[in-house]
Length: 194
Length: 194
DNA sequence: TATGGTTCCTAACGTTCGTTAGCAAACGAT
DNA sequence: ATCGTTTGCTAACGAACGTTAGGAACCATA
Image (cartoon, rainbow over all chains, first blue to last red):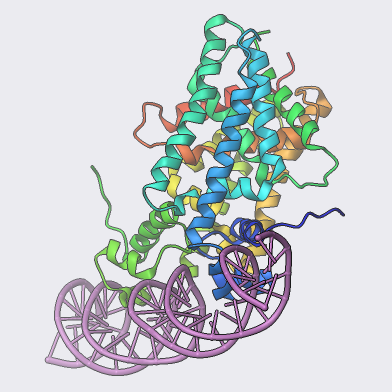
């Protein structure tokens, strides 16, 4: 049971993340959040500017993490496409499992961002998915991978990954790395040319 | 452009489904819903008892549809496990694509149900997933299918299917049956013993 | 012509919402 | 000892929320 002293702002983000995940952004009131922190609602505004600012930070922090992981996984172009893809999958899973609550918010609550943040977010998200799409497309071209349709394969791949926060429990019998490895194995096997 | 005359109640359900999907249940107000229908907020209550009643109808209607489809798909036990699984997958996709908006609500907004409806819903959902799990488990036993872990395979299978409402667009180039068939093909290929 | 169901309105209810203003205690650094 | 930062409080703001009451058209059927 280790614990680091977080700044109040970080505590707010963390508690809000858990609430946004289980109740949803719109259904979580500032008074609930305050109560979970043991303070009054008005007090929160000594640390943040608005409720949406919290959501914004959660969503874009994770977007950054996903991007950084993908870049690192595919940096070495000397690797085979399959190996780059495996690393990207494992990185994706690692980001997801590192903070499941934040991941769930990232995946489902972003639509409560108001413009222009919402559009910015969707642009980032699309860019990220394009990264996977291009990787798979290259694999099909070189013959390393096989699938009837690259776009289709990309969607089902990311679907399997992004469903993880709905069932993953930290402290389960499988470690994040176990899961990452096993998922990569299972998803790649369907794509690899025999 | 065909259109059938719906009862006002059915129109309310339909419009609410679209709004719940795009804005979320909690963030959709009765005044928004009324405005989308071209009437005043109070008028809605001539047709329904509460906002949650609408959500309840949407969620349980789809639960019934999923169950009925699964039962029909696996009714003939003379079929191979693989064939039963293929039919169940195609049925699942057919229900999803038949009303994407309602499916999205079913998948994401059920947590705004209050007790005891929420627990009832989760019980149904778990029973449905157990159906797939047992089918896959049987396939592993008979040797028809192969996978390192039946539970894991079930989760990734349903994940791929349930992600569909986030990207599926009716009037796309693929018909619902095309998609059903293609998804079943791709997902089964990873499971079938070679 | 009367009746009952469907449909919609206006006006308002009590509650909760996100947020702000103004003030105060505690704190580490200078 | 002083000062700025961090942290928190109470009280209240206007707005929006889900919902209700009571009344009034409309329309098919009897």
